[in-house]
Amino acid sequence: MAQALVSYDSVIHELEMRSFRPVYYLMGDEPYYIDKISNWIADNVLQPEERDFNQTILFGSDVTASQIVDAAKRYPMMSEYQVLIVKEAQLVKNTEPLEKYFKAPMSSTILVMCHKNGTIDGRKKEYVKAIQQVGVLFESKKLRDRDLPAFIEDYLKTRNASIDPKSTQLIADSVGADLSRLVGELDKVLLSLPEGNRRVTPQVVEDQVGVSK
Image (cartoon, rainbow, N blue to C red; front, side):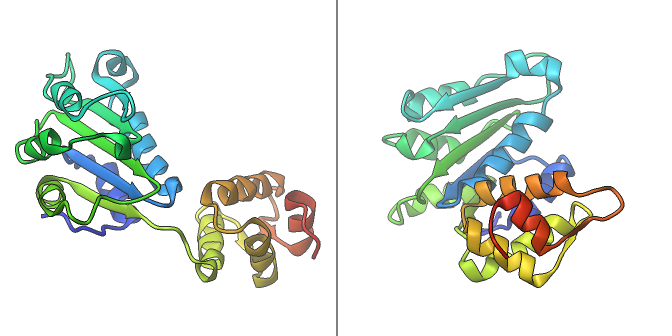
C-alpha cells in the first residue's frame, strides 16, 4: 500500500525506474512539486510519437468525475500506456465515480490528478483510502522560511555549484518561499557562473538577484 505522505524524491525515483502506478493524486499548497511530478510523467512516460493518441490533459472546471473515468477506461493505441492528466482537480464535483474507479483502475492508464491550493477534504476517508491502495497520494507542502537555505544549497549542489551561508540567506530573504520563483532566480544565478568557478558569492547574488549584500 502506498503511504499518504510519500516524499517528492521517492516519487521521482520510482518514476525514473519506470515503475508506474495507475493513480497519482498530487495535492497541496506548494504547486512547484505538483508541477514537477506531473511534468515528468507528461514528458517521459510516452514516446513523442505515442502522445498524440495516448496523452490527454483535462481541466477539473470543464469535466465531471464520470467523464474522467470514461477517459481513464479507454485503452491505449499502439502503446503500453495512456497518460491522463487532470489539472484543477480540486474543482471536480461529486467524486464518487472516481472513488469507484480507484478501487479497480485500468493498469494501462496512468491517471494524474493535480489538486493545487489545498488537500482532499478530511471527511473523504474512503476516497483517500482508495487512492492509497492502488497509487500515490502526495502532499506538496509550503516550505517554512527556515527550510529555504537547505533547499537552495541542495538545488545548487545537484547542479555542481556551491554557495556560502551569507549568499544563501540573502537569496532566501529576498525571494522567499515561492519555490517556482526561487528556482527561477537560482537558474538565473547558475547561468551567470563561469565554467571554472561554480561558486555563488554575495556579489553574484547582488548582480543577478538584485539585492544588496
